[in-house]
Image (tube, rainbow, N blue to C red; front, side, top):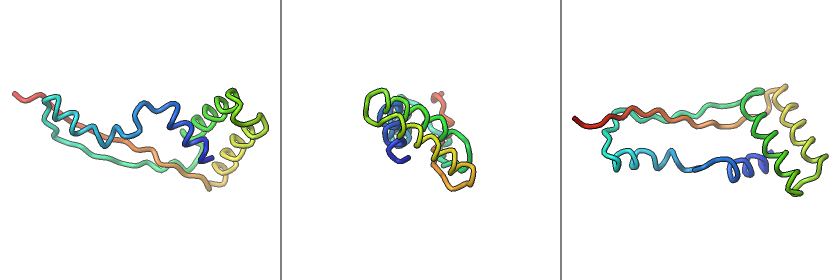
Length: 102
């Protein structure tokens, strides 16, 4: 499943380091950052992970990186782990309140 996570991040995430760069970019744009907080949500059950495993395994299969059985196996393993709450993933969220200076 880690291969799916890495593949998904490499192929579908526009900027994996955006959160770390966001505050300086806002300041450079002339905004005053009044609040900047980061929270990581743990994804234990059949949440968003099911979608990225499905997307990544499908593309990996279509490109010939893995076979059909492996793609199905990855999806089944995610579903199994979700049912017994053995899987987890981190979903970072950033909250920003910024304003233009008067």
